[in-house]
Image (cartoon, rainbow, N blue to C red):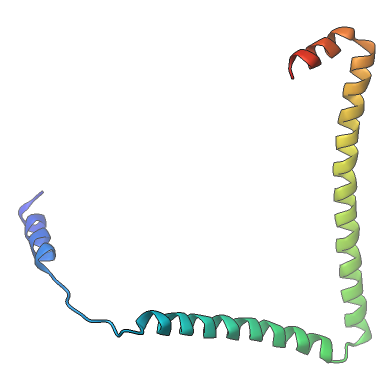
Length: 111
């Protein structure tokens, strides 16, 4: 360390903070946090309620319906593909075991 760094370290080491926190400091902090969290949740609920309370124009309703339908179809397609791949892998193993007796022995030995 050079001289300036040593001097800075000495100054920082000699620095002492003395303060007294109020006895209810922790409860005040947690109360402020909970009020902020409640206001954030209430803000989202108000937005959601405002969205559903206003009259939707036919174009907006059609757009919303189309988006929900598209997301549903996409989710179903992904889920179907995952199930199909899993089933295909099991069928492949079953087929290989039925035509190759050594693969069955290897499968049993690997357990």
